[in-house]
Amino acid sequence: ALGLRAHGRSEYTDEELISIIDQAALSGGVLLYNSKVEYDSFKLKLVQSVRTLLSIILDNKLKVFDCEHYIEVDLPDIIEEDGTVRSIGRFNARIDLLLQDEKDDFVVLDLKWSESSRYHTKIRNQEDLQLVLYANALEVAYPEHKVLGCGYYVIPQCVIETRESFFCFMDHANYYDL
Image 1 (cartoon, rainbow, N blue to C red):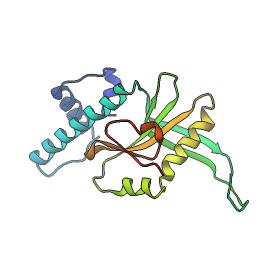
Image 2 (cartoon, rainbow, N blue to C red; image 1 turned 90 degrees about the horizontal axis):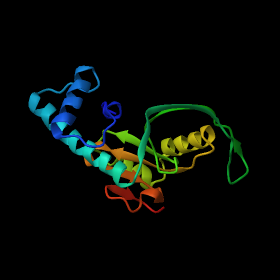
Image 3 (tube, one colour; image 1 turned 90 degrees about the vertical axis):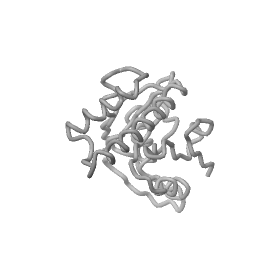
Image 4 (cartoon, one colour; image 1 turned 180 degrees about the horizontal axis):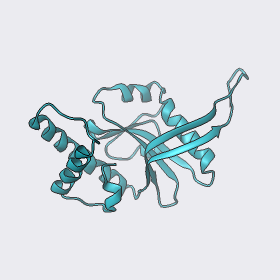
């Protein structure tokens, strides 16, 4: 989360964001780039994406519950349409960004660095198993909270790819009613 959670603020200047990115790079949190020009371009794109993400969080009255939230649960069996029972068993994961609304219900964002249309395609084809498993695991671990929605936040494009109706009226969200 690039240190944003530790700072506990909702507004940053571009210089502050660039400083946080540089600190993460120095600590090994960012891949090395071939040139200063390439790295500076990356930083500007990342600043834009962080601003967009902060805007999504604030505009929708969400708050950060945790970053890289570790979860480990026993998931219940799945009963297929033909009656076949499939056991999932023990599941563990780290959820990139776990948000909560005003009622403390969850919103899951999985952060992706790729500029490809892979996540768009996963959502459109209902192949977003990672998000489905995150939602199921949260429902088991925190039965007192609902999972309102899950999506991929594609960092280079500053957009959420999702099929969850929670996101349907948000700016910067590609919602697919499937």
